[in-house]
Length: 353
Image (tube, rainbow, N blue to C red):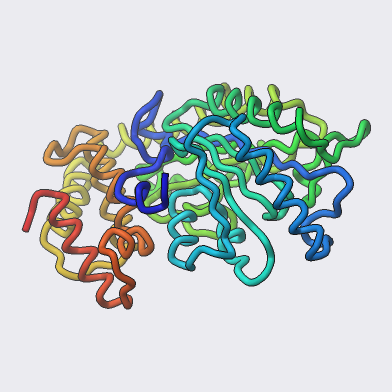
């Protein structure tokens, strides 16, 4: 598998299948781990960075995690390739921006259901990703990977505190459970603040499309736990499955019903204006595309439009982003040319000229 081979289709997080996928775009479970005997990444020497990278590559690529695992050395990749990986949610923006001489890499599973960042904030950031509401599947997968690696490497661990991590909020289990949710009705009704209040009450973080510090483009929100110390993994997972996600889904479904009952004409106007814009625009930027696609996705899920399917919409969420667009076209483009190419691509994918 190469980066080129994963460019022209949606990644696991946008496949649009799985339980409750009309609201829950994807489920992710991530573990933070550090090798015993080495300082954290921010305090390690250049030699130690290289030793950690070499050790992790040997174990990760040794065949224990299955066939077809792709290893990407971020020092040798282009800025465009790194941005592509960010857009596919396989590395963080922090990891992509490393550049320079600091040795960093990512290992990607053949089906993109897992990725392992090496030398990000921690020596290892292991994640499993599933489409829709599949937290159990994601947890079981990442747990298996963790066990396989821990059989071969000693992780930094304290009997008192648990797994030791660079950020104090990850100390303990080192687990971060998150779901990507599509919440257009809550945004339209102005009730997204309900979710934010509920998150604060339950000590959760709500972030935008690309995690910490990003905006909620396309009405996509990441909801995740903020602390891991003092809570076992299963308790964190159970809280998400049985309390956090169902409550947010209920808010969104209630908002959708209210929109249809009280503002059906406005909903149809949003949906069909989005369709008209996307099928006729000749210049369009990323943010506007994601907003229009969000309205279309809402319209399909609310039964207001049947001229496009969820799979196509989800693919366009990804392909319309800058790195994917340029990789798909096969050339780097300035912003003006990108806006024109993006509009043309969308018209073609939606069956227009």
